Image (cartoon, rainbow, N blue to C red; front, side, top):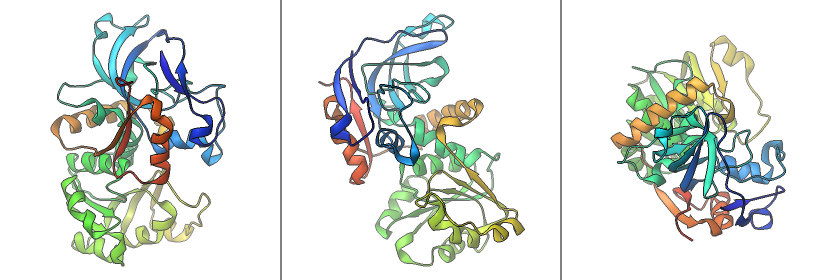
Length: 329
């Protein structure tokens, strides 16, 4: 099969290779997926670069945890009727060496989610890491019906999913975006209200959007940078569910948080409870089918251009998702 891989960590053009590898064979409880589109997320970039102190867990890695395609073989214990089923996959390269940047990937059967015909492959292909993270940020502490939820970075990959599932779950969603010209886009993507961070006094404008009522939960993109704002807007017993930070060792105002019984929930996609992953997969698929979740696709490149695709994400120059099309040469 055609595949991209790296045998050491480093810059994309120095370590990524494209060539031929043996076709994988599904084992017990696994399926093999003929990949049509491979999604790329910042986490894939981090693993390849060695960010956050990560090291090479395997001598060779085929990158990317997310993708979409068709099951073409099943292992023992899997219903043979699944052959031919369109699916999106998640955690393909989590504690496993070979992800979706290849003609074929093998995953546990429950990590291959049936994909209804109405959903294009490129919409589902990048859903796993950001979508499941966004879902977990919203629902890790229970239902959100009637709650006020702030989603920071609402137009990011995680933010779009978080907004969609929070709104579908009955919450009032307030998104933050970088600039005023992104407000309408955030509203179209599912927010009830949107506040641009460039306009100053973000906390006051969030509370203005809620009619002065504190918020119940924040799905947080920048834990360190937004901690002071969150202290201003959160109710007692509120929650910050955070999946990223700029400063890896931020100062935390212990007593301010403690006296208000605020929960800080730290999230890392590789290790969510399996039941949470499966609930997220169901809800996210439903959101795609309903049209409540849509990702702008900035670039769809062939496998041979994987280094360019990684660099687009690293530069932050893409205003939408970057995917690899495995069906083109």
